[in-house]
Length: 200
Image 1: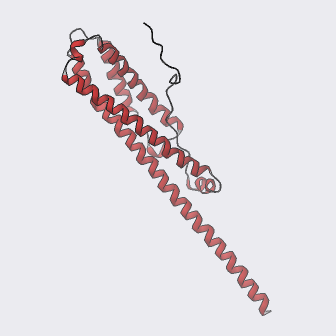
Image 2 (image 1 turned 90 degrees about the horizontal axis):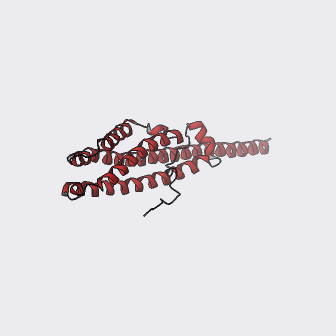
Image 3 (image 1 turned 135 degrees about the horizontal axis):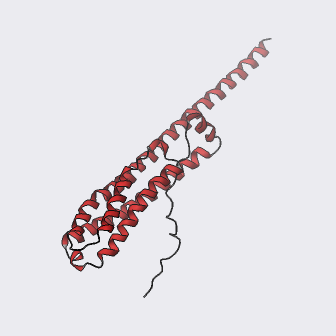
């Protein structure tokens, strides 16, 4: 009888230790997901900051170009409208799924495209290109585009780590219980894989 109680006590203790270890693992896994999710949110803030920086430079850039006589008003209007649309797209960092990131990227891509068209048109106006203010703003915009590319790359890296962590078994079980969902990535613009055609 004594031996049976001792065996029962040992089995009960082992079961209790197993349950305790499982609970501690679950808590640690959940906390890791919280930290990684916050990392994604933080990096998203860095991406938005660089896009906002670009958006803040555009009015000065447009005003500098606007000063040229006979400058193509339609091109300026397209840039202003694209900026307005890009700044109106707000994404909730807690919902950075593929669709939300794609919507944000599309609006920002339209602005990038409008800015590119503006730069092509500016080439026809040497008096604009010659001004110090224009050159300074052009350098600022180019630097900001580089920062945007860097922050997007970092965002994708953080998202990849987060997504891989929550999709692995057995973490996927805790992710499902905790409401952790995969995040979306920034993707290359359509046609970016093809080299531009140069004609002379």
